Image (cartoon, rainbow, N blue to C red; front, side, top):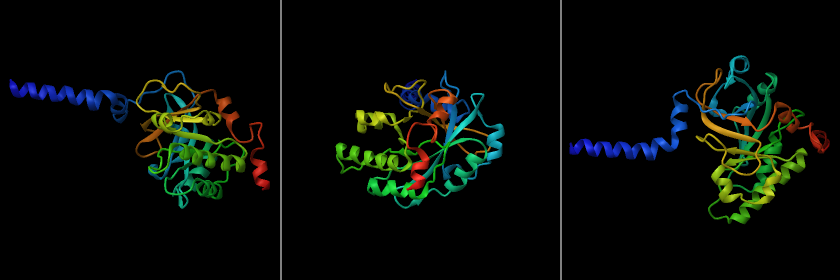
Length: 256
């Protein structure tokens, strides 16, 4: 009886510490992805981690919560030296198969923001109909103050905005934004929030995209893939794309 009691205590402890807080994660891994209610515009983000994607199968058979996949965010660059192995093919195929596509840069803590911005610009040729460039920022250099970090992120955003003529999208996860990018200056940029295993967004500010799980599954993609929703209609999503906004737009940077 004593042994059974000990086992029961450990079982309860394990459930409340490791299972209950991540219930959505456990269900997602076993094919029961939680779909946010009230959203119809779904998308994914991909990189070399998804390997070779069968874009035809994805286009013809891929649905999320009985809705078609509308947009695809694609990893392009990281730091100042790394171009994602699958970027060129993924970026081309996404447009060929009719998806609204976007490209993102993974912010490195090991190189200056300005150099990273120029590296992204050098390798990513956006066109009319593409989503604005995306900055994925998830870490802060340990030796950099919060204020200096904010200025570095802003430097990347402003250089890239000046080049493409549109305000970049800022991607980060919920807690990181609250702890490191809690400044009204960032509210001018469309926000893509990563917040998993919850049934609603806890962030109180405005946001455009929500990455709600990293355990999605779709025909044409081997292994898990991130699922996202857009906070608006398909018309709104298309209005966000380059060439649809009242900005200097894609033609301006082509002339430079």
